[in-house]
Amino acid sequence: MLPEPPPLPALTRSEGELVDCYLEVVDLLGRINPSRARDTYGALRAAQALVARAAALKEALTVMHMRGETELHHATLGRALRVLDGERRSGLVAVAPEPKEPPRR
Image 1 (cartoon, helix red, strand yellow):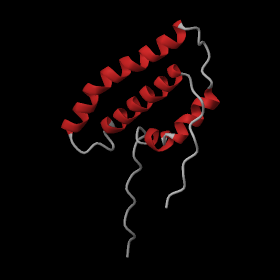
Image 2 (tube, rainbow, N blue to C red):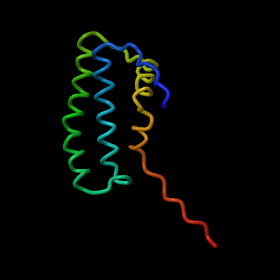
Image 3 (cartoon, rainbow, N blue to C red):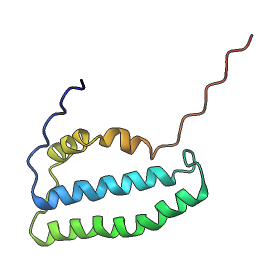
Image 4 (cartoon, rainbow, N blue to C red):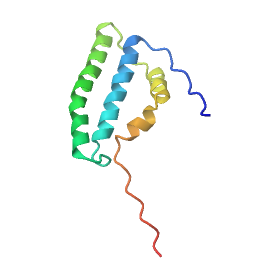
């Protein structure tokens, strides 16, 4: 049985929306990443979806700003991202490592 993940930190509705939208954008960028993508159609569909998700991310930040939430509490938001597997998900945006060469005989 897998250990239970730590609970999400308390977030405002706007902070939760920011984290969700950010991770959706990261997931789409990972699917587009040319060093990892398998086919152009999948990458194209992810790129098309990216436009809408980026707009939602902008909207989440706009709402926060307009409501007077001028600071991003990076420690709390970072904890939320880690609980939601953000480290692995954001790692898919990075260039994939070169495959290791098989040992020479």
